[in-house]
Length: 535
Image (tube, rainbow, N blue to C red):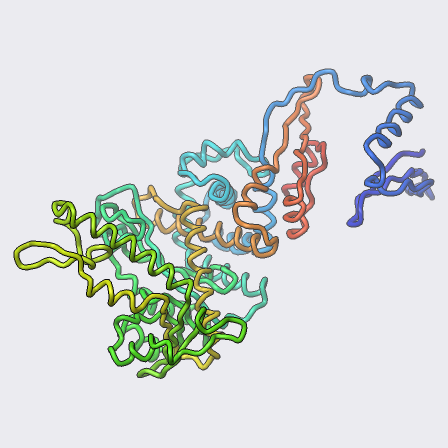
Protein backbone atom coordinates (compact mmCIF):
# COMPACT_ATOMS: atom_id res chain seq x y z
CA UNK A 1 0.00 0.00 0.00
CA UNK A 2 1.45 3.40 -1.03
CA UNK A 3 1.06 6.67 0.91
CA UNK A 4 2.52 10.19 1.06
CA UNK A 5 5.00 10.83 3.91
CA UNK A 6 6.61 14.06 5.12
CA UNK A 7 10.01 13.41 6.72
CA UNK A 8 11.31 16.20 8.95
CA UNK A 9 15.10 16.65 8.97
CA UNK A 10 17.47 19.41 10.04
CA UNK A 11 18.02 20.36 6.39
CA UNK A 12 14.28 20.60 5.69
CA UNK A 13 11.00 18.67 5.24
CA UNK A 14 11.00 16.02 2.48
CA UNK A 15 7.97 14.56 0.63
CA UNK A 16 8.18 10.91 -0.35
CA UNK A 17 5.73 8.38 -1.79
CA UNK A 18 6.31 5.32 0.35
CA UNK A 19 5.07 1.76 0.00
CA UNK A 20 4.30 -0.40 3.04
CA UNK A 21 4.80 -4.19 2.80
CA UNK A 22 5.66 -7.17 5.02
CA UNK A 23 8.67 -9.50 5.08
CA UNK A 24 8.20 -12.66 7.16
CA UNK A 25 5.27 -10.98 8.84
CA UNK A 26 7.24 -7.85 9.81
CA UNK A 27 6.17 -4.44 8.39
CA UNK A 28 8.68 -2.69 6.10
CA UNK A 29 8.67 0.53 4.07
CA UNK A 30 10.41 1.51 0.85
CA UNK A 31 10.50 4.82 -1.02
CA UNK A 32 8.85 4.62 -4.42
CA UNK A 33 9.46 8.24 -5.36
CA UNK A 34 11.13 11.21 -3.65
CA UNK A 35 9.42 14.53 -4.37
CA UNK A 36 12.16 16.67 -2.77
CA UNK A 37 11.86 19.43 -0.17
CA UNK A 38 8.48 20.85 0.75
CA UNK A 39 10.16 24.26 0.93
CA UNK A 40 11.04 24.02 -2.79
CA UNK A 41 7.35 24.07 -3.72
CA UNK A 42 5.23 27.20 -3.79
CA UNK A 43 1.92 27.33 -1.95
CA UNK A 44 0.08 27.21 -5.28
CA UNK A 45 2.01 24.09 -6.36
CA UNK A 46 1.23 22.26 -3.09
CA UNK A 47 -2.42 23.26 -3.39
CA UNK A 48 -2.51 21.87 -6.93
CA UNK A 49 -1.01 18.54 -5.75
CA UNK A 50 -3.62 18.34 -2.97
CA UNK A 51 -6.48 18.99 -5.42
CA UNK A 52 -5.23 16.29 -7.81
CA UNK A 53 -5.04 13.76 -4.94
CA UNK A 54 -8.61 14.64 -3.88
CA UNK A 55 -9.83 14.32 -7.48
CA UNK A 56 -8.21 10.88 -7.70
CA UNK A 57 -10.22 9.91 -4.61
CA UNK A 58 -13.40 11.32 -6.11
CA UNK A 59 -13.61 14.08 -3.50
CA UNK A 60 -13.67 17.86 -3.32
CA UNK A 61 -11.88 20.08 -0.77
CA UNK A 62 -15.15 20.96 1.01
CA UNK A 63 -15.80 17.23 1.53
CA UNK A 64 -12.79 16.83 3.83
CA UNK A 65 -13.09 20.12 5.74
CA UNK A 66 -14.96 19.93 9.05
CA UNK A 67 -18.42 21.47 8.89
CA UNK A 68 -18.29 23.10 12.31
CA UNK A 69 -15.02 24.53 13.71
CA UNK A 70 -15.05 26.42 17.01
CA UNK A 71 -12.11 28.02 18.85
CA UNK A 72 -12.70 27.19 22.51
CA UNK A 73 -9.56 28.74 23.98
CA UNK A 74 -6.33 30.63 23.17
CA UNK A 75 -3.31 29.40 25.15
CA UNK A 76 0.38 30.19 25.43
CA UNK A 77 2.71 27.24 24.90
CA UNK A 78 6.04 29.12 24.70
CA UNK A 79 6.69 29.62 28.42
CA UNK A 80 6.04 26.00 29.38
CA UNK A 81 8.11 24.65 26.47
CA UNK A 82 11.12 26.91 27.16
CA UNK A 83 11.04 26.72 30.98
CA UNK A 84 10.79 22.92 30.96
CA UNK A 85 13.78 22.75 28.59
CA UNK A 86 15.80 25.13 30.79
CA UNK A 87 14.73 23.02 33.78
CA UNK A 88 16.39 20.05 32.11
CA UNK A 89 19.53 21.99 31.12
CA UNK A 90 20.02 23.17 34.73
CA UNK A 91 19.17 19.72 36.20
CA UNK A 92 16.53 21.37 38.36
CA UNK A 93 14.48 18.17 38.70
CA UNK A 94 17.47 16.36 40.22
CA UNK A 95 17.86 19.14 42.80
CA UNK A 96 14.16 19.46 43.58
CA UNK A 97 13.61 15.72 43.92
CA UNK A 98 16.14 15.80 46.77
CA UNK A 99 14.27 18.71 48.34
CA UNK A 100 10.90 16.95 47.88
CA UNK A 101 12.14 13.91 49.76
CA UNK A 102 12.79 16.14 52.78
CA UNK A 103 9.55 18.16 52.57
CA UNK A 104 7.11 15.35 51.68
CA UNK A 105 4.55 17.74 50.21
CA UNK A 106 1.22 16.42 48.93
CA UNK A 107 1.00 18.87 46.01
CA UNK A 108 3.19 19.36 42.93
CA UNK A 109 5.17 22.35 44.22
CA UNK A 110 7.72 22.06 41.38
CA UNK A 111 4.97 22.64 38.81
CA UNK A 112 3.71 25.57 40.91
CA UNK A 113 7.25 27.03 40.89
CA UNK A 114 7.47 26.69 37.09
CA UNK A 115 4.16 28.50 36.78
CA UNK A 116 5.33 31.31 39.09
CA UNK A 117 8.55 31.70 37.06
CA UNK A 118 6.55 31.84 33.81
CA UNK A 119 4.41 34.61 35.31
CA UNK A 120 7.47 36.43 36.70
CA UNK A 121 9.02 36.52 33.20
CA UNK A 122 5.77 37.10 31.33
CA UNK A 123 3.80 39.62 33.39
CA UNK A 124 5.01 39.97 37.00
CA UNK A 125 2.14 40.11 39.47
CA UNK A 126 1.04 38.90 42.90
CA UNK A 127 0.73 35.22 43.80
CA UNK A 128 -3.03 35.73 43.92
CA UNK A 129 -2.97 36.89 40.30
CA UNK A 130 -0.66 33.94 39.43
CA UNK A 131 -3.48 31.68 40.57
CA UNK A 132 -5.99 33.50 38.35
CA UNK A 133 -3.70 33.41 35.29
CA UNK A 134 -2.76 29.73 35.46
CA UNK A 135 -5.40 28.73 32.88
CA UNK A 136 -3.76 30.93 30.22
CA UNK A 137 -0.91 28.43 29.70
CA UNK A 138 -0.70 25.02 28.11
CA UNK A 139 2.02 22.65 29.29
CA UNK A 140 1.75 23.27 33.03
CA UNK A 141 -0.43 21.08 35.23
CA UNK A 142 -2.97 23.63 36.41
CA UNK A 143 -5.53 21.29 37.94
CA UNK A 144 -5.71 21.03 41.73
CA UNK A 145 -3.50 24.12 42.24
CA UNK A 146 -4.87 26.42 44.95
CA UNK A 147 -3.69 29.84 46.11
CA UNK A 148 -2.11 28.49 49.31
CA UNK A 149 0.12 26.21 47.19
CA UNK A 150 1.92 29.30 45.84
CA UNK A 151 2.70 30.52 49.36
CA UNK A 152 3.76 27.08 50.60
CA UNK A 153 6.13 26.83 47.63
CA UNK A 154 7.80 30.07 48.77
CA UNK A 155 8.33 28.49 52.21
CA UNK A 156 10.06 25.48 50.60
CA UNK A 157 12.32 27.79 48.59
CA UNK A 158 13.21 29.77 51.71
CA UNK A 159 14.15 26.62 53.64
CA UNK A 160 16.46 25.48 50.82
CA UNK A 161 17.80 28.78 49.47
CA UNK A 162 21.51 28.04 50.09
CA UNK A 163 21.26 24.66 48.35
CA UNK A 164 19.47 26.23 45.36
CA UNK A 165 21.98 29.08 45.00
CA UNK A 166 24.92 26.68 45.10
CA UNK A 167 23.31 24.35 42.54
CA UNK A 168 22.66 27.20 40.09
CA UNK A 169 26.23 28.48 40.47
CA UNK A 170 27.72 25.03 39.81
CA UNK A 171 25.54 24.46 36.75
CA UNK A 172 26.38 27.84 35.25
CA UNK A 173 30.08 27.18 35.67
CA UNK A 174 29.77 23.91 33.74
CA UNK A 175 27.46 25.37 31.08
CA UNK A 176 29.71 28.32 30.26
CA UNK A 177 33.04 26.57 31.07
CA UNK A 178 34.72 29.85 31.98
CA UNK A 179 37.22 30.63 34.68
CA UNK A 180 35.76 32.82 37.40
CA UNK A 181 38.59 35.32 37.63
CA UNK A 182 36.55 38.43 38.38
CA UNK A 183 33.26 39.06 40.21
CA UNK A 184 31.16 42.23 40.30
CA UNK A 185 29.35 43.31 43.44
CA UNK A 186 26.65 45.89 44.02
CA UNK A 187 23.77 46.54 46.38
CA UNK A 188 20.19 47.67 45.89
CA UNK A 189 17.12 48.09 48.08
CA UNK A 190 13.75 46.39 47.55
CA UNK A 191 10.82 48.20 49.10
CA UNK A 192 7.44 47.01 50.42
CA UNK A 193 4.04 48.66 50.24
CA UNK A 194 4.18 49.07 54.00
CA UNK A 195 5.68 51.51 56.48
CA UNK A 196 5.17 49.29 59.54
CA UNK A 197 8.32 47.81 61.10
CA UNK A 198 8.49 44.57 63.08
CA UNK A 199 11.30 43.89 65.57
CA UNK A 200 11.93 40.33 64.32
CA UNK A 201 11.47 41.10 60.61
CA UNK A 202 14.11 41.97 58.02
CA UNK A 203 11.79 44.69 56.68
CA UNK A 204 13.23 47.91 58.08
CA UNK A 205 13.31 51.60 57.26
CA UNK A 206 16.60 53.06 56.12
CA UNK A 207 18.26 54.62 53.07
CA UNK A 208 16.15 53.54 50.06
CA UNK A 209 17.63 53.69 46.53
CA UNK A 210 14.12 53.89 45.09
CA UNK A 211 13.54 57.19 46.89
CA UNK A 212 10.91 55.80 49.27
CA UNK A 213 12.38 56.39 52.78
CA UNK A 214 8.90 56.16 54.34
CA UNK A 215 8.57 52.54 53.16
CA UNK A 216 10.16 49.49 54.76
CA UNK A 217 12.62 47.59 52.59
CA UNK A 218 15.39 44.99 52.51
CA UNK A 219 18.96 45.29 51.21
CA UNK A 220 20.04 42.90 48.44
CA UNK A 221 23.74 42.35 47.67
CA UNK A 222 24.33 40.65 44.32
CA UNK A 223 27.44 39.06 42.80
CA UNK A 224 27.54 38.53 39.01
CA UNK A 225 30.22 37.51 36.50
CA UNK A 226 31.28 39.29 33.33
CA UNK A 227 28.44 37.63 31.34
CA UNK A 228 25.83 38.96 33.82
CA UNK A 229 25.32 35.45 35.14
CA UNK A 230 24.18 35.79 38.76
CA UNK A 231 26.65 34.04 41.04
CA UNK A 232 24.92 34.42 44.38
CA UNK A 233 23.24 36.99 46.59
CA UNK A 234 22.84 37.88 50.24
CA UNK A 235 19.81 39.48 51.87
CA UNK A 236 20.13 42.00 54.72
CA UNK A 237 17.86 44.05 56.96
CA UNK A 238 16.62 47.30 55.45
CA UNK A 239 18.62 49.45 57.88
CA UNK A 240 21.97 47.79 56.99
CA UNK A 241 24.74 50.10 55.72
CA UNK A 242 25.42 48.98 52.14
CA UNK A 243 29.19 49.36 52.44
CA UNK A 244 29.16 46.86 55.31
CA UNK A 245 27.62 44.07 53.21
CA UNK A 246 30.42 43.41 50.71
CA UNK A 247 33.02 41.81 52.98
CA UNK A 248 30.47 39.45 54.53
CA UNK A 249 29.07 38.51 51.10
CA UNK A 250 32.55 37.79 49.72
CA UNK A 251 33.54 35.70 52.74
CA UNK A 252 30.37 33.60 52.42
CA UNK A 253 31.04 33.27 48.69
CA UNK A 254 34.65 32.09 49.13
CA UNK A 255 33.69 29.67 51.90
CA UNK A 256 30.63 28.11 50.23
CA UNK A 257 31.89 27.96 46.65
CA UNK A 258 35.53 26.95 47.18
CA UNK A 259 36.93 29.92 45.27
CA UNK A 260 40.61 30.43 46.05
CA UNK A 261 41.30 33.62 44.17
CA UNK A 262 39.31 36.17 42.21
CA UNK A 263 39.21 39.94 41.79
CA UNK A 264 36.18 41.80 43.11
CA UNK A 265 34.97 44.87 41.20
CA UNK A 266 32.70 47.35 42.98
CA UNK A 267 31.71 51.01 43.06
CA UNK A 268 33.11 53.58 45.49
CA UNK A 269 30.00 53.33 47.69
CA UNK A 270 31.18 49.84 48.71
CA UNK A 271 34.57 50.90 50.05
CA UNK A 272 35.91 52.74 53.06
CA UNK A 273 39.13 52.40 55.03
CA UNK A 274 37.78 49.54 57.15
CA UNK A 275 36.53 47.60 54.09
CA UNK A 276 39.82 48.11 52.26
CA UNK A 277 41.79 46.76 55.22
CA UNK A 278 39.44 43.76 55.51
CA UNK A 279 39.81 42.99 51.80
CA UNK A 280 43.58 43.12 52.06
CA UNK A 281 43.69 40.97 55.21
CA UNK A 282 41.32 38.44 53.56
CA UNK A 283 43.64 38.18 50.50
CA UNK A 284 40.86 39.46 48.23
CA UNK A 285 42.17 41.57 45.35
CA UNK A 286 39.96 44.44 44.26
CA UNK A 287 39.24 47.03 41.60
CA UNK A 288 37.06 49.62 43.28
CA UNK A 289 36.01 53.19 42.61
CA UNK A 290 38.08 55.58 44.75
CA UNK A 291 36.53 58.68 46.32
CA UNK A 292 38.77 61.21 44.58
CA UNK A 293 37.68 64.24 46.61
CA UNK A 294 38.37 62.40 49.90
CA UNK A 295 42.07 61.85 49.14
CA UNK A 296 44.79 64.12 50.63
CA UNK A 297 45.26 67.42 48.74
CA UNK A 298 48.79 66.50 47.62
CA UNK A 299 47.54 63.26 46.04
CA UNK A 300 44.54 64.95 44.43
CA UNK A 301 46.75 67.61 42.83
CA UNK A 302 48.88 64.91 41.18
CA UNK A 303 45.85 63.03 39.90
CA UNK A 304 43.89 65.95 38.37
CA UNK A 305 46.95 67.66 36.86
CA UNK A 306 46.40 66.89 33.17
CA UNK A 307 50.14 67.48 32.53
CA UNK A 308 50.86 64.24 34.39
CA UNK A 309 48.44 62.22 32.23
CA UNK A 310 49.20 59.84 29.36
CA UNK A 311 46.95 58.72 26.48
CA UNK A 312 45.03 55.52 27.31
CA UNK A 313 45.81 54.18 23.86
CA UNK A 314 47.20 55.44 20.55
CA UNK A 315 43.80 55.55 18.86
CA UNK A 316 42.35 58.20 21.22
CA UNK A 317 43.96 61.67 21.60
CA UNK A 318 45.14 62.59 25.08
CA UNK A 319 42.76 65.56 25.30
CA UNK A 320 39.82 63.17 24.72
CA UNK A 321 40.82 60.46 27.20
CA UNK A 322 43.88 60.04 29.40
CA UNK A 323 45.11 58.58 32.70
CA UNK A 324 47.73 58.86 35.41
CA UNK A 325 48.76 56.19 37.90
CA UNK A 326 50.38 56.51 41.33
CA UNK A 327 51.11 54.20 44.24
CA UNK A 328 49.37 55.32 47.42
CA UNK A 329 49.61 53.38 50.70
CA UNK A 330 48.52 49.77 50.00
CA UNK A 331 47.01 50.33 46.55
CA UNK A 332 47.51 51.67 43.06
CA UNK A 333 45.31 54.61 42.15
CA UNK A 334 44.48 55.16 38.48
CA UNK A 335 42.83 58.48 37.66
CA UNK A 336 41.25 58.83 34.22
CA UNK A 337 40.06 61.91 32.37
CA UNK A 338 37.26 61.81 29.78
CA UNK A 339 36.12 64.79 27.75
CA UNK A 340 32.68 63.21 27.43
CA UNK A 341 32.43 62.76 31.23
CA UNK A 342 33.58 66.39 31.73
CA UNK A 343 30.69 67.67 29.60
CA UNK A 344 28.25 65.51 31.55
CA UNK A 345 29.63 66.74 34.92
CA UNK A 346 29.35 70.36 33.74
CA UNK A 347 25.75 69.84 32.58
CA UNK A 348 24.70 68.16 35.85
CA UNK A 349 26.26 70.94 37.93
CA UNK A 350 24.51 73.64 35.87
CA UNK A 351 21.15 71.99 36.59
CA UNK A 352 21.92 72.11 40.32
CA UNK A 353 23.05 75.75 40.11
CA UNK A 354 19.76 76.66 38.40
CA UNK A 355 17.89 74.95 41.23
CA UNK A 356 19.98 76.82 43.83
CA UNK A 357 19.28 80.16 42.11
CA UNK A 358 15.53 79.49 42.35
CA UNK A 359 15.95 79.09 46.12
CA UNK A 360 17.73 82.44 46.24
CA UNK A 361 14.71 84.07 44.62
CA UNK A 362 12.27 82.33 47.02
CA UNK A 363 14.21 81.76 50.30
CA UNK A 364 11.13 80.29 52.01
CA UNK A 365 11.59 77.11 49.93
CA UNK A 366 15.11 76.63 51.32
CA UNK A 367 14.10 75.86 54.93
CA UNK A 368 14.38 72.05 54.81
CA UNK A 369 17.22 71.80 52.25
CA UNK A 370 20.31 69.76 53.23
CA UNK A 371 23.89 70.31 52.11
CA UNK A 372 23.51 67.60 49.46
CA UNK A 373 22.73 68.15 45.78
CA UNK A 374 21.94 71.78 44.97
CA UNK A 375 22.07 72.59 48.68
CA UNK A 376 25.87 72.48 48.72
CA UNK A 377 25.97 75.50 46.39
CA UNK A 378 24.16 77.69 48.95
CA UNK A 379 25.90 79.75 51.62
CA UNK A 380 23.96 80.58 54.78
CA UNK A 381 25.26 83.40 56.98
CA UNK A 382 24.79 83.85 60.73
CA UNK A 383 21.76 86.10 60.22
CA UNK A 384 19.94 83.52 58.10
CA UNK A 385 20.67 85.12 54.72
CA UNK A 386 21.55 82.89 51.79
CA UNK A 387 23.80 83.37 48.74
CA UNK A 388 25.40 81.35 45.95
CA UNK A 389 28.58 79.54 47.07
CA UNK A 390 30.92 80.41 44.20
CA UNK A 391 33.91 78.87 45.96
CA UNK A 392 32.17 75.48 46.12
CA UNK A 393 31.11 75.75 42.46
CA UNK A 394 34.67 76.49 41.32
CA UNK A 395 36.05 73.67 43.48
CA UNK A 396 33.59 71.20 41.94
CA UNK A 397 34.53 72.31 38.43
CA UNK A 398 38.16 71.24 39.02
CA UNK A 399 37.08 67.59 39.03
CA UNK A 400 35.01 67.64 35.83
CA UNK A 401 35.82 64.56 33.75
CA UNK A 402 38.03 62.85 36.35
CA UNK A 403 37.40 59.39 37.82
CA UNK A 404 39.67 57.52 40.26
CA UNK A 405 39.94 53.74 40.59
CA UNK A 406 41.89 51.87 43.28
CA UNK A 407 43.31 48.37 42.82
CA UNK A 408 45.57 45.86 44.53
CA UNK A 409 45.99 43.77 41.35
CA UNK A 410 49.05 43.60 39.09
CA UNK A 411 46.92 43.80 35.95
CA UNK A 412 47.76 46.18 33.12
CA UNK A 413 46.04 49.58 33.29
CA UNK A 414 43.85 48.90 30.23
CA UNK A 415 42.68 45.60 31.75
CA UNK A 416 41.79 47.33 35.02
CA UNK A 417 39.80 50.05 33.24
CA UNK A 418 38.08 47.46 31.08
CA UNK A 419 37.04 45.34 34.07
CA UNK A 420 35.81 48.38 35.97
CA UNK A 421 33.73 49.52 32.98
CA UNK A 422 32.11 46.05 33.01
CA UNK A 423 30.58 46.96 36.38
CA UNK A 424 27.49 47.99 34.41
CA UNK A 425 26.77 44.22 34.17
CA UNK A 426 25.66 44.06 37.78
CA UNK A 427 23.75 47.32 37.35
CA UNK A 428 21.99 45.79 34.35
CA UNK A 429 21.19 42.70 36.44
CA UNK A 430 19.52 44.87 39.07
CA UNK A 431 17.63 46.69 36.32
CA UNK A 432 16.31 43.37 35.02
CA UNK A 433 15.35 42.17 38.49
CA UNK A 434 13.68 45.42 39.48
CA UNK A 435 12.14 46.53 36.18
CA UNK A 436 11.55 43.56 33.86
CA UNK A 437 10.96 40.94 36.59
CA UNK A 438 9.46 43.53 38.98
CA UNK A 439 10.94 41.96 42.08
CA UNK A 440 9.62 44.97 43.99
CA UNK A 441 7.42 46.27 45.51
CA UNK A 442 6.91 43.14 47.62
CA UNK A 443 3.67 42.23 49.33
CA UNK A 444 4.96 39.52 51.68
CA UNK A 445 5.31 40.16 55.39
CA UNK A 446 7.09 37.18 56.95
CA UNK A 447 10.82 36.54 56.56
CA UNK A 448 10.19 33.13 54.98
CA UNK A 449 7.87 34.51 52.30
CA UNK A 450 10.23 37.40 51.56
CA UNK A 451 13.19 35.04 51.20
CA UNK A 452 11.13 32.62 49.08
CA UNK A 453 10.08 35.44 46.74
CA UNK A 454 13.74 36.46 46.29
CA UNK A 455 14.78 32.83 45.56
CA UNK A 456 12.01 32.44 42.97
CA UNK A 457 13.03 35.72 41.27
CA UNK A 458 16.70 34.67 41.37
CA UNK A 459 15.88 31.38 39.59
CA UNK A 460 13.78 33.26 37.00
CA UNK A 461 16.62 35.71 36.35
CA UNK A 462 19.20 32.90 36.07
CA UNK A 463 17.10 31.08 33.45
CA UNK A 464 16.24 34.16 31.38
CA UNK A 465 19.85 35.38 31.47
CA UNK A 466 21.09 31.99 30.22
CA UNK A 467 18.59 32.24 27.37
CA UNK A 468 19.78 35.79 26.64
CA UNK A 469 23.41 34.64 26.50
CA UNK A 470 22.88 31.73 24.12
CA UNK A 471 20.36 33.45 21.79
CA UNK A 472 21.95 36.95 21.86
CA UNK A 473 18.40 38.33 22.10
CA UNK A 474 17.55 41.13 24.52
CA UNK A 475 15.35 40.42 27.52
CA UNK A 476 12.34 42.24 26.08
CA UNK A 477 12.76 40.47 22.72
CA UNK A 478 12.66 37.11 24.51
CA UNK A 479 9.50 38.00 26.44
CA UNK A 480 7.82 39.37 23.32
CA UNK A 481 8.74 36.18 21.42
CA UNK A 482 7.45 33.85 24.15
CA UNK A 483 4.22 35.86 24.34
CA UNK A 484 3.57 35.23 20.63
CA UNK A 485 4.00 31.45 20.95
CA UNK A 486 0.30 30.66 21.15
CA UNK A 487 -2.16 27.93 20.22
CA UNK A 488 -5.84 27.98 19.39
CA UNK A 489 -7.73 25.16 21.08
CA UNK A 490 -10.25 23.93 18.48
CA UNK A 491 -13.27 21.69 18.67
CA UNK A 492 -14.43 20.00 15.47
CA UNK A 493 -18.00 18.95 14.63
CA UNK A 494 -19.09 18.81 18.29
CA UNK A 495 -16.64 15.96 18.93
CA UNK A 496 -15.04 15.52 22.35
CA UNK A 497 -11.47 15.37 21.01
CA UNK A 498 -9.65 18.71 20.79
CA UNK A 499 -7.01 19.76 18.28
CA UNK A 500 -4.60 22.70 18.49
CA UNK A 501 -3.61 25.17 15.79
CA UNK A 502 -0.24 26.83 16.36
CA UNK A 503 0.43 30.51 15.62
CA UNK A 504 2.95 31.47 12.93
CA UNK A 505 6.62 30.83 13.78
CA UNK A 506 8.79 33.94 13.39
CA UNK A 507 12.57 34.41 13.23
CA UNK A 508 13.03 34.96 16.99
CA UNK A 509 11.08 31.78 17.77
CA UNK A 510 13.35 29.87 15.40
CA UNK A 511 16.42 31.32 17.18
CA UNK A 512 15.13 30.21 20.59
CA UNK A 513 14.09 26.75 19.40
CA UNK A 514 17.42 26.12 17.66
CA UNK A 515 19.47 27.48 20.57
CA UNK A 516 17.64 25.26 23.08
CA UNK A 517 17.25 22.35 20.61
CA UNK A 518 13.53 22.11 21.22
CA UNK A 519 10.91 20.84 18.77
CA UNK A 520 8.06 23.26 18.13
CA UNK A 521 4.55 21.79 17.67
CA UNK A 522 3.14 21.18 14.19
CA UNK A 523 0.67 23.58 12.59
CA UNK A 524 -2.16 21.28 13.68
CA UNK A 525 -1.54 19.13 16.77
CA UNK A 526 -3.67 16.56 18.54
CA UNK A 527 -4.20 16.43 22.30
CA UNK A 528 -2.06 13.27 22.47
CA UNK A 529 0.84 14.99 20.67
CA UNK A 530 0.53 17.98 23.00
CA UNK A 531 0.81 15.72 26.04
CA UNK A 532 3.95 14.10 24.59
CA UNK A 533 5.45 17.50 23.73
CA UNK A 534 5.42 18.69 27.35
CA UNK A 535 6.35 15.39 28.99
